[in-house]
Length: 131
Image 1: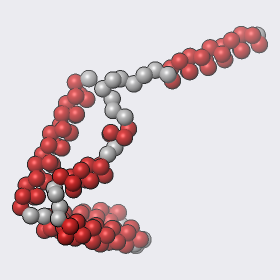
Image 2: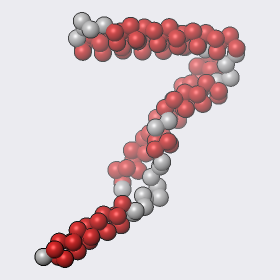
Image 3: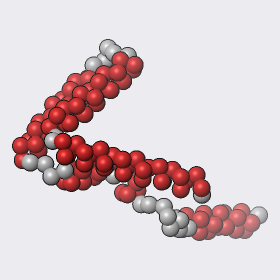
Image 4: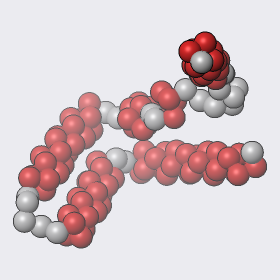
């Protein structure tokens, strides 16, 4: 009985080790490529060819928004709905301030880059549904 129990235990260990070593499909991307939102923003800022003055303004605006978000998170007496509404308002404010810093050419470039990103998302969704 002990031999049978030991054999079944060994079989479970060996099969689980073999299962753990299976390879991922070739088309799946490493985690670093799937979660790269911050790197996309850095790439966008580089492609916009911001002037030093614009970079300083962007950084100051980012710090201001960061402080506002932290102050909002520190508030304990608001409801979830109010929190979401205020976060959306901060997001809209941040977007409008960023756009006010950019010139017309840079705004067009941002719009083009967003379109490309949306089409890439659509392509990925289509690939997922066809698999």
